[in-house]
Length: 85
Image 1 (cartoon, rainbow, N blue to C red):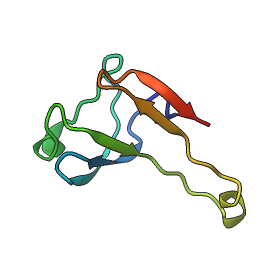
Image 2 (image 1 turned 90 degrees about the horizontal axis):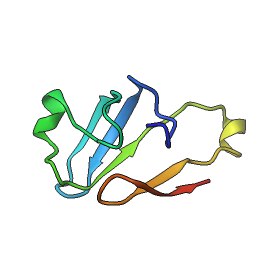
Image 3 (image 1 turned 120 degrees about the vertical axis):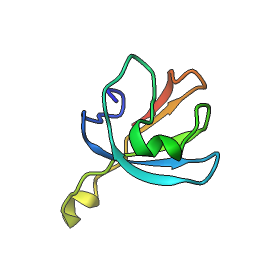
């Protein structure tokens, strides 16, 4: 969450690359480096699945011309291996 500037309780979309599921939920801070899917969403994502987590922010049309996504890549142990920008 820190690496991607995702705040506790911020809305996120979770894309499960393994099974194609897509869901909308919110972020909860857990123990270091762990990604967990809780509640009803846990029925859509299994431990070991590869997921993409998306967070958005609203900007004006002018800001959108200069806004760039913050990308965080992790390895199979959820350790950050690279960031852009």
